[in-house]
Length: 377
Ligand SMILES: [Zn+2]
Image (cartoon, rainbow, N blue to C red; front, side):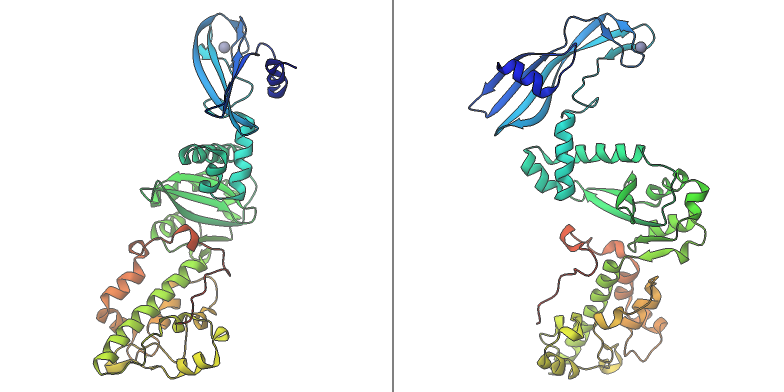
């Protein structure tokens, strides 16, 4: 079988398309398959009416590799002039309009993207990060177009940093079936506002929970569009834990400074002890932990009576920042929350404005239950 016939069979081409030639570039490890559209006449992609050729446009698509060789399809694609629709490009059977990859290549890419990160997939596919992101975005768009009117009870709203954190996307996902329901640019209130009108009244009434981080614009949008939203907003456990860690560590550092001034080194090297699960402590660590100060020194807020962050996680869902975090920050504080807030503006600002905190990196966003354990200090 000649290479031209071999590739005609492999590509599954139908009339009017034929393989005109195959070039193998040994040095560049590349195979280029030249495909011809035949003499015409051609059919309008909108109405199927035959029309005369208007001109032709050179195009190329990346196809599945031939052995270790990257493989490309090249063709001069005719444009025809339809009396009803004007000048239209002939649709090619191996790729979607506008894509620079064949459908089979995109299918392989999507399978890989499901299994690994974009960086991992683009390395295996030998394409750029932007090309990998484009394939993923087109797949999501096709999925969104297929979205029906079924009720989704549990939603997740999250932001995704792209372009090295210069750009953000807002993503609404169906948490029960792990699929994307909505995408929008940026992470403003308006970004999420666009989602709610896409729901039918029955879909809106059927929402029982919306999981999100503590990003206020998402909360504001949800409250503005979802009835009884405060009873349905669920803060993501990862973010609650992160705020707890930051709050406990902030108080520990303050205490440590004050104690050191008095020559007391009891808190030296204790950072991770406060973040550790009590059941994971060794006997020596447990004894050392009990010996730490539990009340604030000189009227300052302390770290609380033998409470670590994991101790404090047995609080009911839905999480509420005011309810959950105040007892943590103020554990051992003899004064009411209002007084503490006045005394420790920087700390309260850090709690109230999660936007100011560094966004978690992708490897920090682990599923619940798989948070990285800190080594004992
Ligand atoms: Zn037409």
